Amino acid sequence: MIDYSFPGLFNYWVVFLLMMIGFYIVIVHENLIKKIVGLNVFQVSVFILYISMAKIKGGTAPILADGIEVYSNPLPHVLILTAIVVGVATTALGLALVVRIQESFGTIEDNEIRDIEERQE
Amino acid sequence: MNIEIVTSDLLNIATLIFLAVIGIAIARIRNLFAVVMLSGIYSLMGASLYVILDAVDVAFTEAAVGAGASTVLMIGTLALTSSREKAATSPANAIKGLIICTLLGAALIYGSLDMPLYGDPSAPIHHHIVPRYLNDSMAEIAVPNVVTSVLAGYRGFDTMGETFVIFTAAIGVITLIGRKRRRRKTSKDDGGHDS
Amino acid sequence: MMQHKMILRVVSKLLIPFILLFGLYVQWHGDFGPGGGFQAGVIFASAFVLYGLIYGLGSLRTVLPSWVTRLFLSLGVLIYSGVGVVCMLMGAKFLDYYVLSSTEHGGQHLGIMLVEIGVGMTVFAGIVTIFCAFAGRAAADMYQGDGDQEESNS
Image (cartoon, rainbow over all chains, first blue to last red; front, side, top):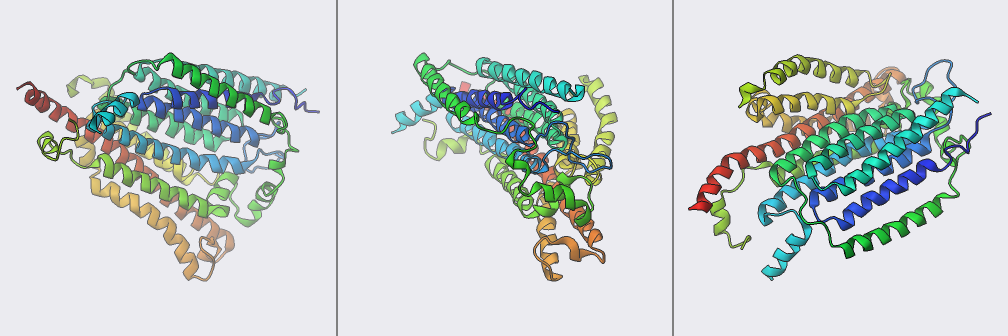
């Protein structure tokens, strides 16, 4: 008999910790590259949430073969697979915006950009 | 109790703790080069976790994309900007952020208390449409890798949208930074953006 | 400056063919094991990114001119949606592959293969394009950075 109470909800709790670390970086840090890294941290935590839900104890990867009865759930894998590639595409777009901000403001610190904009007005 | 299951659970917990440690390090370190390298390591750790959780396709993608491609792009951005995070944020802001994050995290943990336990086959997520994919896809599509058959077959429309997103993002990057840069002289002429 | 990276140049020259081969393996083997268009595209692109990092953007652009990557970028999307339209023209629903071949399984295999090729092409071209955009900016910065400094000094 398999005991399901051992890691129990531990995966989800670590996911929430990572989520909050990412969120903290995004709202508190001023540097734009750091904010994008924070978004990445958040993003990976969401992926882990989905993949943890898909796992079945004693199951294997969802590649059909003879003699195996229990497979983990393939549907979250599909959703996250595409989300990862889209994630890097949007990260690249964000980084491109950071490069343009650096070129026109000479800084990528959020507070300094705000100061420059206020001075213009 | 099955030794394989216990081993995979312990590996799962160890990897998660590693991830949490790396996450905290990312939040605390101010040298952006170190932060970018740590975020690559974080992705690679995530990929190892996906292997433990049976998501081999996802692990493959994360190792190639998250740890490889996005680290290269971030280092490229660092080359164009600065690799040092300037002033630390004001302590007042940090405390406010910490309070918000703690409250939100507590709310999320409270919400997780009635979620299905990890690895439980009776969880609702395993009973809606997935049995059909697992039982019938061999007869309907005859592709052993269920992830591929769902990705390109059952949910092909979805994947088409994702491909279009990548296409659009690449076009966006070309429009933003792909063209030759204007000379400084002309940027002076076109009306004091900088001053 | 480039001549000093002897080890990197030799090792990368050895590695790149194998990376390309592995990318193709992942592309065609996605039905039976882990892999598929998304992963294959990134692996294939990483070979070219490695080449660009070691030998410089100019050499990469000689091997892979920008019109080629732009063509691949749109061709991949076109192949994917084209398969859907062909399915419609042959009397089935959009992206309903079973009409593509005489047997139902053959049609599904063909459809999935074509679609994965489309995904692989777009992802490959997308990553290479994005890398070249960033690297091109950095190179322009380096050349212009010197000029800018002289200007601001004077």
